[in-house]
Image (cartoon, rainbow, N blue to C red; front, side):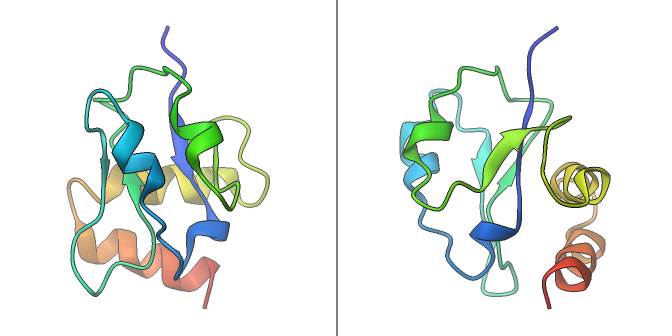
Length: 96
């Protein structure tokens, strides 16, 4: 099974986007001004690891190894692709 990555709280209000530039499958996204982090689509991520060293704030972790509230960050990343408002509410709750 492919390792899937998740973006966590160090990205909040930073969104450097270096990870987007290096992703070979374009699975990292950011929407509009309402978004406070970038999001990784778990269905598109191939686990190539290129985003890890590209992130200057160390916000990207394996989905099962996120340091703080891993289930909530993983849920927010996956949910954003189905319900952006619900994902944004999770991010705002985790990192006000």
